[in-house]
Length: 318
Image (tube, rainbow, N blue to C red):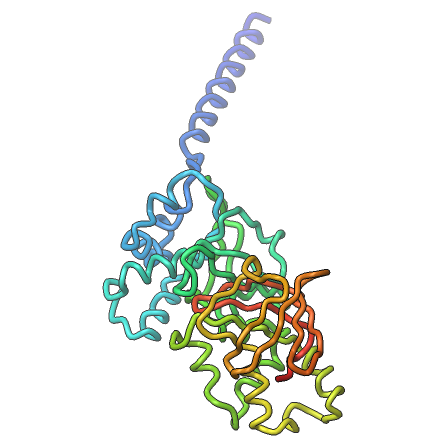
């Protein structure tokens, strides 16, 4: 009996010792929570991002407190970005430019993959059109997750102490009017009109900074369909070239970044085409064109680097 008790005691002590050692081993192998910056620094495929963050002076921001969402480009994405923009290396990118490009990958709140929906969000970046308004980002979830029509999300929900990282396969440049028009599937008819072979180079105009900033009142695909019905035309190609040019220019205001907060009742606007239209604010923002037709502004303040877009439900006619 004494031997049995002695054996039991030895086994019990051994098990306690084994559990204690195992617990200490688990404690030593448990990963210490990391910030977004620390996670990027520890990931070999994000070494270019880490170097860019250091160069732009954003390491403290992404190491500190806060709740951020970072769409993190891979090393391959940075290589493509440098080549496409004529930079031999990261060192050749001006710091001011690099900082805004990086901030264009950052949201000011934590957004997990399950919370991502199609639509616009604001990044922490700013462009030349406005010193106070943050740039918009368009997220399309129709097939995977695509950002501004250029970057696909390849890995999600890498948790950090100050937010979350989602990896992307392209650097997300500062979006122009053209970028956002092309990225949103509700503007395919508008893009088709702007890029028709007999039109001026609207891509160059609305993608550049000459005459900018621009305020663009952008008709949806449905608006163009309704216009064709109204004019009894079979398709967009049936609109004469000169007429289409005047119509498209009539939707653009040059030299002003007019946000929704700057729209006042009975405001008269002179367009890039030379004609005018009137904005009213009673019962929502509406536009009365030179044909006395009324269009509703159905979405506002898509901020671009060179201007701003407001979405309308009817094509305006000069």
